Amino acid sequence: MTKPKVFVTRKIAQEALDTIGAIAEVEVWEDELPPPRDMLLKKVPDIDGLLSLLTDKIDATLMDAAPKLKIVSNMAVGYDNIDVSEATNRGIFVGNTPEVLTETTADFTFALLLAAARRVVEADVHTKKGKWKTWGPLVLLGHDIHNATLGIVGFGRIGAAVAKRAIGFNMQVLYYDKVRRPDEERELGLEYVPDLIELLARADFVTLHIALTGETHHLIGAAELAAMKPTAILVNTSRGPVVDQKALYQALRSGRIFAAALDVTEIEPVPPDEPLLTLDNVIITPHIASASVTTRTKMASMAAANLIAGLRGEMPPQCVNPEVASRKG
Image (cartoon, rainbow, N blue to C red; front, side, top):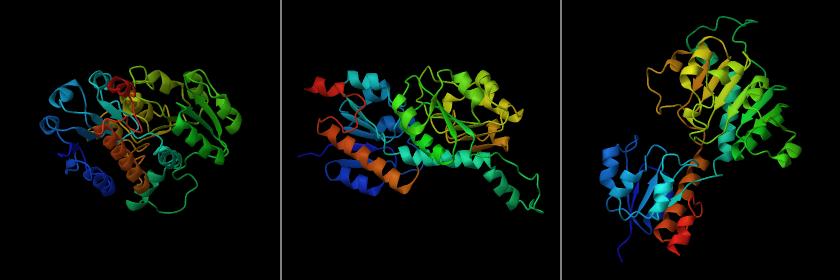
């Protein structure tokens, strides 16, 4: 019996590749950078399954080029790189990898918050450049985390995990979300703030944990940044376009807010001429919030499981469009 064909758009954990290889013919894109669009279109005409990353655009054009495609397994929680409606209309399953990276991303969010507040990256550069001359009472002063107020924008699994960490620092935690969660409020001692501007005005730290949609694009712009305290710090580990980077640059450059820490940017990778890169009061990391050995291995295994189910015509364990199963039934 002929094995189904699979294309994996980047090297992932070997154990996940071995699992897929046991039932399918697998081709892996070996380069560090994602396959260029024209190359990806050349790779898909004969495939039955595609294991993709956020960097791969899976749209109608690609699906037209892949008439045998049964499953797109995205190794990510988000799937804004995939036209899910188009996939559903064509009877193509879409899988993702939720929950597995919640705690790891929350850890990294707090790492960025701490680093920005206490100017850890600036201090490291200061030392390595030979600028450390003596202990000084006004050198590299930052802001305390303990007893401060944290504003969480988007209170899903990751937002809740960040809140639990904040409680350990005796922070007051506010949250803004379309859905109010009374149980979590009682359990964790949170305060629901129904107005975004009010939350921004009250918080010492603001951390973003929202999906990218048309409604959330540039949710944090000039007006929102102007509402924040001049001592406030913004952290974003969600999606880059949620923040208007031009407005953020102006806010940081003018001292409108104290600092920012970003694991995501509007364009990824961040262009070398991005103005934010010229500022000392911003930390930018290369989308690594989930980058622990354990978590990335679990993500790869979950993506493999979704892929294999889809190849068999079964609904993936983590399925974005379960309605496809009823159509197939």
